[in-house]
Image 1: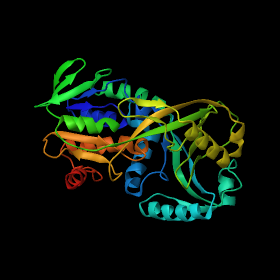
Image 2: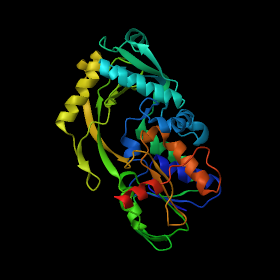
Image 3: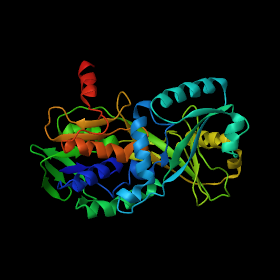
Image 4: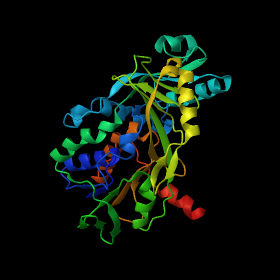
Length: 363
């Protein structure tokens, strides 16, 4: 089995397949988990996860917090803490209540609390908050450590890990054209994030993938100013403070770049909008000094639901990616894809791409 793309989902798929006895080759054009899986905000959240993915996110949340137990001691400094999604306007409050109701039905323990109660949970929160969605099962991790956490487990399981080994194409019979020569595989898994569109094309499949150029900001180390994972009803803020005092500000504000060239540059108006919203939510951040900003590429299908399952018309070829809040759910998604590949019934249903290919033909 060749798994092409060593992000969270590729690593998890490869690890679970190898532990089941399959001979696994895991390839990436760079170091493992250094694209989207290593530069995202590291948020482990139910409130930002789509309702359809809540059951998956709940299981993955436990995997992140107990990563050392199933990943040979590897860890990402997984931290459990409450999560707040805040409304500052009546319109946002209505949006928040509806969103919490739908996610609660999907199994997320989210309750609506008053602004006063929200400030008891998060003393750093602005007094302008009207209400908040409160989820006791949120948290965060250090995404930068993801590859370091997976590496020993992959090697101990016998995975043939090839980093800095770009795959340029796949010929009939799954002969891979790579930077290290031609390699043969009996089966393949495509796990390339925003590059899945090009990778599916190697197998003659047209699968449009949207590319988001997310922008993130980190501050210098500060005295404690918050103790939750904080967002706003619009979804345009992801805020948390790490144990070393730095505050990570995200929320999907877009930078400049594309799939071919990667993240090119920070967009000034996005930077200002993001940090102003953060300071509006937590006033103490007005005194913070920014250390740096960077970009990470996020993939999305036409219906914004994941692409996980067999590739139609290509026996023994599989695909995984495009999971909203993909870092939160990533390790669990890899586990259930491995179950399907091994001929087992996945614990939860996959997301086959047949629906997306049918849409493309209709168009």
